[in-house]
Image (cartoon, rainbow, N blue to C red):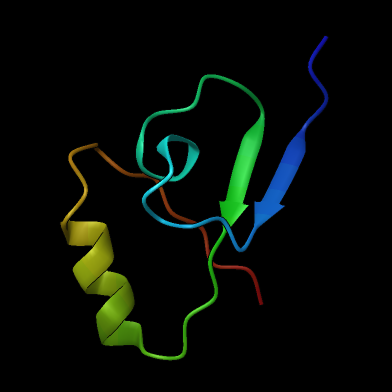
Length: 54
């Protein structure tokens, strides 16, 4: 069994950050600029699911 994993501060060019991961993994990126978030989301080659946690 693979335990759920939370990754933070992962460089965006690493495969785990920019390719599809098949496992219980979440990668957390922090942003200060909402427009930058939308720009990065729209540049993805995948259909996306997103969550906002406050």
